[in-house]
Amino acid sequence: MTYAEQLAIVKEIPMREGVTQVITCPFCYVEKKLSISKIDGQLKWYCFRASCNGRGIYSGRRNLSAVKNYIAGQVQTNAKFQRPLPQITTSIYNHPPALEYLSQVNSLEAVENGYIKVRYCPSEDRVLFYEGDGAVGRSLRAYGPKWVTFGAIPAGVAVGKGQTAVLVEDVPSACSVSRLEGFVGVALLGTTLSYNIRKTLFKYKKVYLVLDKDASTKAIVIKREIGAGLKVRFINRDLKVLTTSQIRTIMK
Image (cartoon, rainbow, N blue to C red; front, side, top):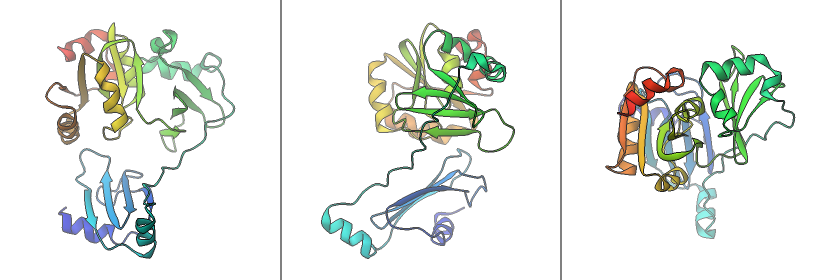
């Protein structure tokens, strides 16, 4: 779909000044994949799916609210809504389905090595992977949103110990990478490369980016942001289901 066609569609989406929301993408029709914002009169939209070309920026006229903010020097990038961390959680060892899931995605070893804190949330039936003051929760149910973010995770989720970082999309893949000695899996959480993530990468001697083959556009953008030192690898199967020897082969 062309830029003009996309613009005609996004202009029909009701948006208030200073608001960012994630909605069903009107271009690929996948739920909760299009981020759209209206900040200081500028309309931005971006689909998280690599196979969708839904993205663009349109600088329209500022409305009265935007003008007032601009004059007062208070133009704000809208703070993303933060879902509070669940108050009641239990040990994963008290819930066999949680242990089974972690074992299936090669994440249990990372927990046992102390690389990441993982708890089970009974009220939501989710396995929670913690990072700082936030966590990402994987549902064990067959319905509803698969992943939910609690609190703030500004710099992704790093799992492991070593001098080589491997950028991946989700936390289980990062946990799977951490089984390799000297490797740290860094989960991007399906988003673009944030400033905070880029800042943390300076401490590593080598940085790899491992994504699905249909995410080539995303890989090009990230490589442009990091530089020529980034080594890019494309895979047909998720890292979280591969053996350590298979992951080593990919790195080579």
